[in-house]
Figure 1 (cartoon, one colour):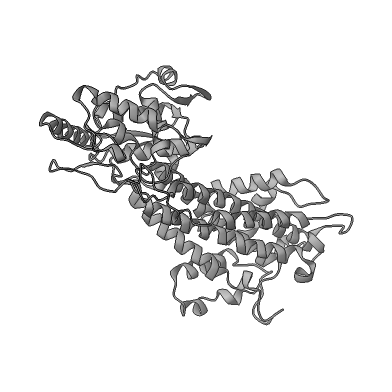
Figure 2 (cartoon, one colour; figure 1 turned 45 degrees about the horizontal axis):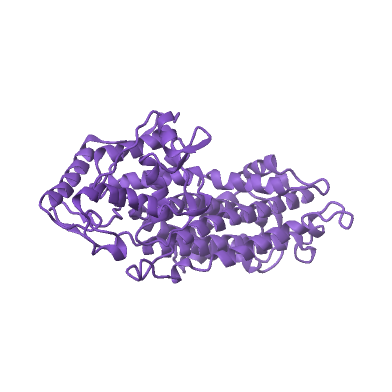
Length: 501
């Protein structure tokens, strides 16, 4: 990779911003000497168990329902090889490369905590693959979100042994060939290592990490988009009064209102209560309450994922006192519930934005040209842009159905409750992308309304600056034209660019 920025993986300090930098190739990773000592000690504890003739799950036993079958010493390495081959059964489109890179760094960070019994050389190869850009091809479907994200992580791990498929320098290759071209050698897995590589929540958490960062940018864009629409339709600022909001003291409500007051400072388009009308519709008046509730959810999910980034989600766990205990840290329920919650929060940003879009394009509500067309009748203007927003909002409602309320037993009912958290994470990111498209449509509509009103000089400095960015991607409509690609480009801009404040 080209970046010189390096983040140390120690199992305790990785955050969502670092994950994104690594995921998009803007940073590399390293393992400190202190962390390597912890990893070696964990490995020594596993080897000591074997030397003493102990029976340890996943080390010298079968897996899942087969855990009561003891494996002969001469077959222990073959057991780990068979595990990866048997579990690499994902289907569907591959995860995007940034998701795979996030998955790899999260797994490496978990192993670096020193509770999984991985060998130093195996962990080192995983980090080298990140730094040299060897990206396993990982199908996005196949995890039930308990016993770890077995199928997705197996598709990552199998490349470490020179099998499977990986992308290197833009070409999809057999795993062994990808390693060879990158100057890397595959490893031969020893006892416990195959299980250590795949027993965790890193598929759902990697998608969740990227989705969370995108959700933060989406939420700020939703606040900014609401400001543009307020100015386009001369919204009432009185509903954002700090003394009014202080009597319902949810911090996120006031944060949204404060942000909007700041961005609208200096606007000549904003009105006071009673100046033009007494009250705005809920999609304006309740922006602090609706957007604020989504921000509350964002903060909760941020806390849960922040813990998971630096958690050991393996099984069994090799404790520092030498005990090897089986538990349920691989179960994805904390992430599953959080991602389902984030789905709803992101969908709500789009729901209320679509209602503001309707108020912009509907002449009975806006008092502006029908559908913001310059020559209505001959031109349709942004009529069908609202259809697209409605379609996206409706799709979000289907995707927002909680994945975590479903559970189908696996492994002959040994694993009789699962989280479906990876499904929830994928749906959350899809909703966030859909919602960004809805916000983009609102921005385009408010931009067009401001253009028709010739009101650019009356905008607040902050919103005028942002409007210039919007119009650099989607200029005002002089006549009907295809704006499909412009909506997509503006949505991408929203998801990748911070709005400071």
